[in-house]
Amino acid sequence: MRIVLVGPPGAGKGTQAAFLAKNLAIPHIATGDLFRANISQGTPLGQKAQEYMRAGQLVPDEVTIGMAKSRMEEPDAAAGFLLDGFPRNIAQAQALDGYLDETGQKLDAVLDLEVPEDEVVKRIAGRRICRNDSSHVFHVEYSPAKREGVCDVCGGELYQREDDREETVRKRLEVYHSETEPIIDHYKAQGLVTTISALGAVSEVTERAMRALSAE
Image (cartoon, rainbow, N blue to C red; front, side, top):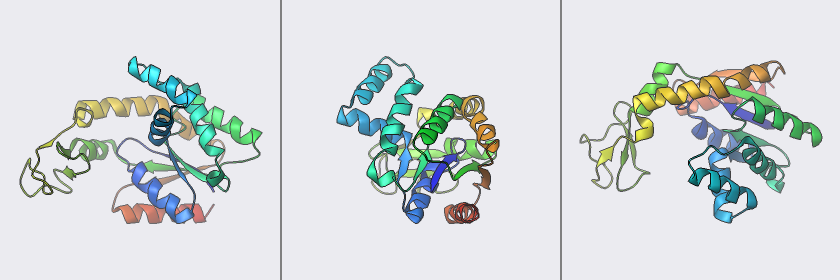
């Protein structure tokens, strides 16, 4: 299957993508991973991306599109893939359409993970990260530390990242609504979109997504 996963920040796209890709035995292709791989390997696209990033500029669509195309051409993606974070806007969606047409492929589904905006803010703004090890993650409401401000694992200080502050989250949501949300209508016109509630336990959301895909 060839699937695009969309949804606002904090919808749990990365978590769901990992579970779905494993269940469907297809690669999970995430934009962040593409950037890290290309930069670490020193590919021409990675070098271009790094130049823009070092200058504090957004990486142009053509660079991101090039990375995604290259990844989709790898052998493990021959039978399908799950795209997470790409396409990010209408230009990227149109480029993906063109690539799939050229290569005789088609998307099977676009899963739209739906979460109320206030829940997104609560999920992200409530996160606390350990200064000693960023893999130690807590949440003031959903998974609080035993001692406020202290990591249960190593005793390090817990802090709120700048990106997780409420005002930053709301700005990220504004960008999502203006840039990424329009691709949902783009794919609705192709009859590809299924909206899934991303509320509840991770396993419940995965089950909803798998049921939607089995109906395709």
